[in-house]
Amino acid sequence: MSIQNDVVRPSSPTAGGLIDDEAAALFAEMLDSVPDLTERVVDQILHGEHSYAESALTVEVLRSIVSENIEALLRGLSGTNRSLDAPRRAGRVKAEVGIPMAGLLHAYRLAGLQLWDEMMARSHGGGRSESLLRVSSAVWGIIDEYSNAAAEAYRGVIDDRDRKDQQARSVMLLSLLEGSESSADTPRLLRAIGLPEHGSYVVIAAELSRSGDDPMPGIVPRLRAAGITSAWTAWKGEHVGLLGLPSDGEIQVATHVVSELAASRIGVSRSFSSLLGAPEAVRQARISMRCTPEKSVGVRSYGSAPLDVLIVADPERAAELRSGILGAVAALGPRDEQVMLDTLEAWFEADGSTAGAAELLHCHRNTVLYRLGRIAELTGRSVSSPSEASELYAALRATRLG
Image (cartoon, rainbow, N blue to C red; front, side, top):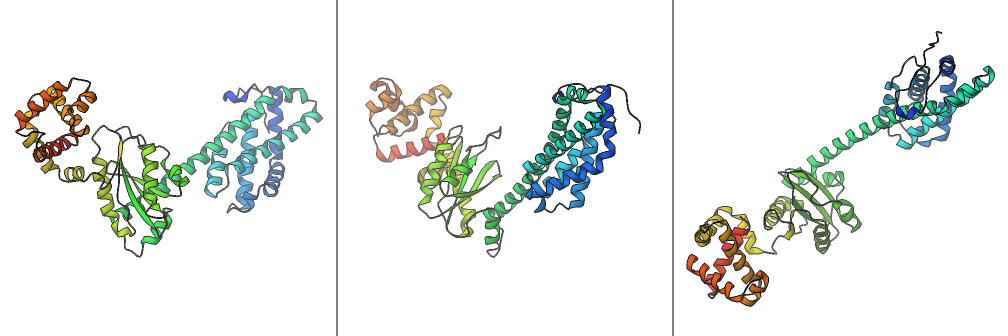
């Protein structure tokens, strides 16, 4: 076996030192002990890690992985070949058969200790102990580098599996929400996405921002803590969820949790007991979401604002209502229109009190009276008439929700 005499400089910053000629020669010589070291490490793994014994990983495959990695470590230390292929394969294989990450890293620690024991034994007999001690930090640095490569490959497999699982759950959830599955398949799909087969359900639709930020950060664990299971997916530019409720009364709990976490416009459907009602619940949730003005944050439950529901459900009629009643106000220009609409909205918010509206607007009561009079001139409708005031209010809501 040839021995390289060049000084090997580990490329990893974790190596922590240089491996000199004498140490490199020692590591190259140890390649003849790979079979023995492999058996020792495999035996320790099988006796010390229950996850290996209980997994689908065969002893033959485990032995080949351990052998490849010990040889790769020694070649990397001796400078003959620096490759991370072996640890990457180890990470992928162990992730695929369900070995925990802790078990993967423990195997590298066992291999490292066996290598170190062998290094100590050989260096002591050959008088090379001092050389080995000088490069000890480099030795453990390279072992860490290889175990990190294995862990990275492991995480890649797990992340890919999670993405595929999430995609599968999303497809199943969408089939339930669209009502495209037969009732016979419903229990199976509910179990697959982690929702109860019996009880009440509610649909939530949350507006997604262009940046894709979570409209309800931490919603799943918060709902789970309240005893409510949920499944979520992105659908038509919205974050849509199907919630399983222990009872109809829990809809108030769910709405409260959503309200605390809301970061966008969110709509909540009425509760329903049969998944046949899911498509209608989706429609209700989406309409409710649009009952909050654009660029605002808020949660609206279906039926809590019937007039807004009518306006949002029929955009064409809502547009006619806006232009037919408040068109002359809009013609004043953006700034003046906003002043008039803010005044009208404050008057309704103050229950028809001009003094209350003036306080909300931080202006004089006479200013409010003047603006309301101007609105009456432009629209032909006065707030002093209940029927005309109701038309103004409907047109105002149509404008706000436009």
